[in-house]
Length: 208
Image (cartoon, rainbow, N blue to C red):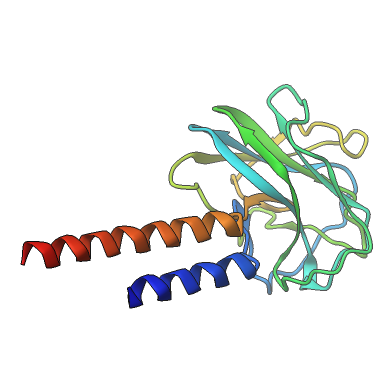
């Protein structure tokens, strides 16, 4: 019972505390911005098994917030938006990470090809480009459900689907997407584990 009470208290604490976002593309917070490209810069990836996301973000050079507007959206392989479009303008980066992020409504990406596209970078809000050197951008495959394929840019209007392909596959610090588990989900999981543990303990006592 004491263990169950402890786990329940932890669950209540988890429900009250904000959870950190798990990002697909991430970059060390010390990564400098080095490019003021205003049109679309994008990272292409393949989804091998459906994944649900609820966070969108943009690279934030210096982790000092976004003057903006810098915009981000997920496109499918046809250039159709499949996520909310988020605009960062006058946005403080309270997380202190290399990406400023915002929560959005859940959106699920089915198996297929996609790109996370961002545009509106400027002298005030540089993006990052490794320019062929080893990239500082990390990639989280979400347990093998995602595969990084390439980066791309557009010479058209800002926000246009990026079709000019470059390599390596994580060359740009531009946009990102990710997931923050709902606190209630964590609470239910912790309580569930506690109940299973308590049941197993009772069975052990009866067997003895």
